[in-house]
Image (cartoon, rainbow over all chains, first blue to last red; front, side, top):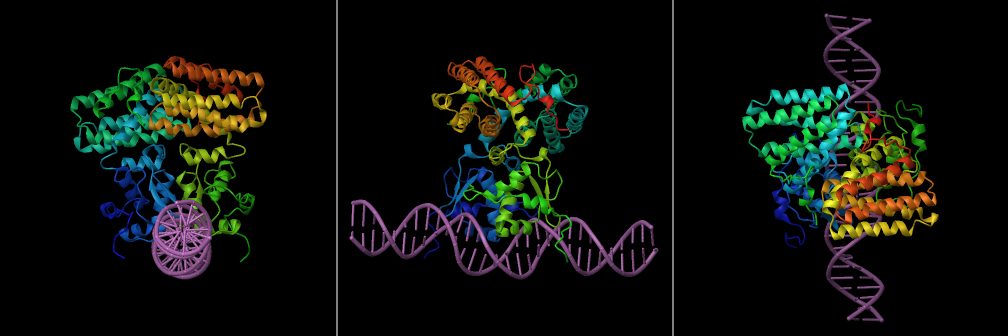
Length: 265
Length: 265
DNA sequence: AATATATTAATGTCAGACATTTTTGGCAAT
DNA sequence: ATTGCCAAAAATGTCTGACATTAATATATT
């Protein structure tokens, strides 16, 4: 018996980094999820066996199984007794699972297709959510939106506070989803983080472009405050159009984006 | 030491049924999830301890922990070492998690607020998805929609085939979400099942109302086939308006529903 | 050659002990 | 009486080793 195993792929396993010391709630699952999200395995590939993972990370089988259970719950892998662990196709991933958003946001170089898909979704849905928010926002919702906007303004000048600016940006859009006062739309607000974080990482904001972005955000806020659904929709389209340009996504000439460009077979 | 335990609630625990023999992949998690979805515990209540659950279901702690892990991943409960297991508020539940949809669909008497929330979401979003589908549907997508529609027609007359009819109904709408050719919208198609199943259980379809429903569905199909986004949107609004009436949800007089009626505090 | 059977390799489950974290209660000092 | 510290209890988290179950594969048998 040599050290060779027929279907395990030691090279891929060896690439996996050790989980960070202060790696949050489930650092192991995060490391494994990141590896899959980065495309180290293709759809249908066999994932390393439990015992190999135990050896590589020097932890008990129990923890490995917990981590794999989390991946399985998010649709990243499929496990069957006797066969092993298979990596599922991207179309099967539970993109709406908050856990998945967290993993995507923590990824250093985000999955390009996923960022495009999520943004295409935002492009079609978010103007609509702004419309709902303009109809349903309470004073509390408005306060949350405004606080986020003020945070964006305060951190706009300083280029060393880009992360903080991104957080306020996320909070701004998330507050709009919450203001729709529907639990489903509200959950969807969690999707934004990866898309916005990716945008921040890739774009080099010019000073004037930042001013422009802030002005567009302000228009959204004002439209919602004044209960003007149509204005809120249009202002949100303007915000996203700028983001689309920065992200290199073609938003076309239609009123609400053209997701047809992103096919899934 | 008496048989009395200070914070456990034996009465609630005793109400839990035994999991069905052929209870699918994780029957235990399903039983526990159904108990929470049915409202047996309020937000912030402490869930039974692992060892009590072990005793009640006569299974090992391992399986109990797996089940609780699934509930935790869906946001139904929150577990912390030393404190115990708390039931989370409905606003924290991961409504977009496919696992959650499955649990909701399997519930005999669905959670009323959740059904309303999901349907309010459909009311606002689905006409829009139909619009996207009209723009992006391929021949394959059309075939899938048509197959589902034919199934609905075939099982319409026979009142003993209501479940089959519901399945085709779900397939019809799901196919439209898929035809949007965006992975995020596509995932959302999984949300429909609970709402539609609940509708079927509660409504007593008259023969003429069924004919009417089929006619409305046919109009959606035709509009998508002919690549007429506006017609698809309007036809879908008509389909949902009928469903809303059957479900007792006020869809108001606005073009796209009034989710403001469903507040979450 | 086709079918039945044993082997193997993977995940799933059980049981018991121990580790860690949070709460709680008691005790002492101010 | 209140505060602060410390120890015990109670819950979840982890480790370990064994066995069960399932699916694929190799091997025998007719």
